[in-house]
Every structure is written in C-alpha cells, then in structure tokens.
Length: 174
Figure 1 (cartoon, helix red, strand yellow):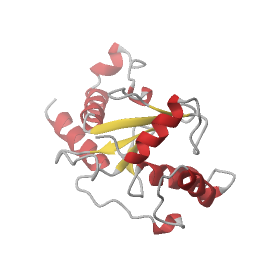
Figure 2 (tube, rainbow, N blue to C red; figure 1 turned 120 degrees about the horizontal axis):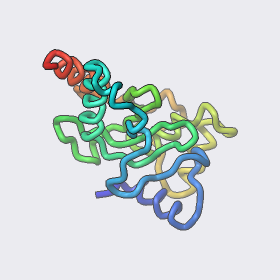
Figure 3 (cartoon, rainbow, N blue to C red; figure 1 turned 30 degrees about the vertical axis):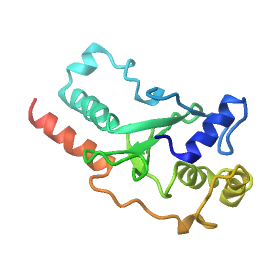
Figure 4 (cartoon, rainbow, N blue to C red; figure 1 turned 180 degrees about the vertical axis):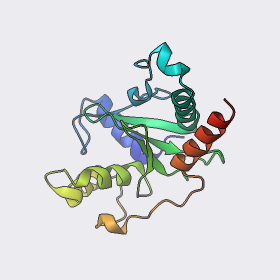
C-alpha cells in the first residue's frame, strides 16, 4: 500500500509538476533502486579487499530492508521507508536517507513529506514553513509548524546500527 502523501507527489510528478523540495528530487518507480546504491565504480581489486567487500555487502543487505521512493539527483541522496529486520509495515516505517558517503540516517517526521520538508527546509527560500505550506496546499498534512516539533523515530535497530552489525559479522567471517 502506497502512503497517501507519496501517492499525491507521484501523481503530480506523472503530470509533469515538480515537488516542493528540490528540482533534483525524483520519485522512484515501484521497486526501482536508487542510483546512490550503485557500486559499479568499484574495481575487481577493490572487491578483493575484505573490508570493502564486507562494507558493500552490509550496505546492500541493509538497503534490501528499505522501500526506496526518492533520489536527489543533484546531491546523490536516496530516501525510503525503513522496514528493518522486524519487517515494519510501510505505515509504521520511519523515513531513512542514504548519503554519498554510504551512511544511513533516520529522519524526523511521521511521513515522507514531513521528513523531506525538515531535510530541505534549511535550504529552501521559504524555509521549513514555506515547504510545509506547499505540502498543505496539496492536501498533504504536516503535523508540526516548527521542525523541532517533528517526532524523532524510535526504532531498533536503526539502519546505521544494522549496517554496522552486518559489517562486523561479515568481516569476522572472512
């Protein structure tokens, strides 16, 4: 089941409209993997290094527990829903980002729209309040007028914790 706010943004994107957050932010098709996860730049020699091989595999295994929904083509950051090893349903899954340094971060908010509004609010011309207003104008609720009032996700393990644990297990087994 697609969350309501994501359905709104996909419909607008399909109609050729931009989202409020970034010109470079593209919503992914169902089951599309974000370019941020591409490891084709690694050489065969790189992959013979146990440290690199364990890290690549740990990232891939962690990424497999995420429903990816957006990619910032300019910044290289990907966004999705963290289901984790407990297989949280998408309605309860917190939003996670994956950056160009290969790190996972949980984002504040109860929806993709809240997380992206918080994430991009610091750079937007109208700030967080302007992005929140644009979301609300499309019928997408934003629960907080101040980004500091957005709830922090509480989930264990976090994607970063899962990735580090898998990395250590894989490295110990090599």
